[in-house]
Length: 249
Image 1 (cartoon, helix red, strand yellow):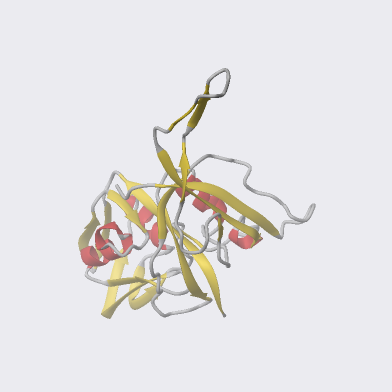
Image 2 (cartoon, rainbow, N blue to C red; image 1 turned 60 degrees about the vertical axis):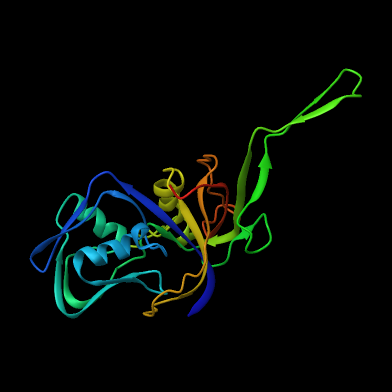
């Protein structure tokens, strides 16, 4: 099944290198800030890991990561940063294959299953919010407008996101829900970008990301983002938040 949706792809900042073992030899991804995937190879965790490991690492239209090569290969993730990298890519075990797809979507990717509603018309990434102060004389015959800076903001909303994409109620559903993306990326102060994509359940073709909106950071923290639309029924929840457009570095 294929459907149109938004993908929020977040950044992870690590102060330590990700160290794993590929085909018996060490492979390392330098410490830094990486999106799960990005048009800029230096900002893409997938492309940086692919270069370090000498393997093909790609994001599929299912939202899962595939690691492949022309011949069988092995990856031993190890403990510590290696295990952290494994989790960020959506894998749950060492790899011994010529092609392997991650068990779950990466926690750096959130898919609400339908497109975002934004404050602006489609394709417009932000709207200006000046800090203008209006100062008037006692008679109001003299009025001054003082502006020191303007912030670029965007508002994202989804009216009814399925519970499994918000707060999974069953074990084994992975870290692909909003509660984790909110904690690790949004509340964590990491950058994120928003793409419009066609997601395919079980798909094995490379994802086509196109041009994103962003990058953004969350503007304010609201720990009570979860809301039942139907009393006493955990079926769907609206998701809404405000973001600030930021520079890449």
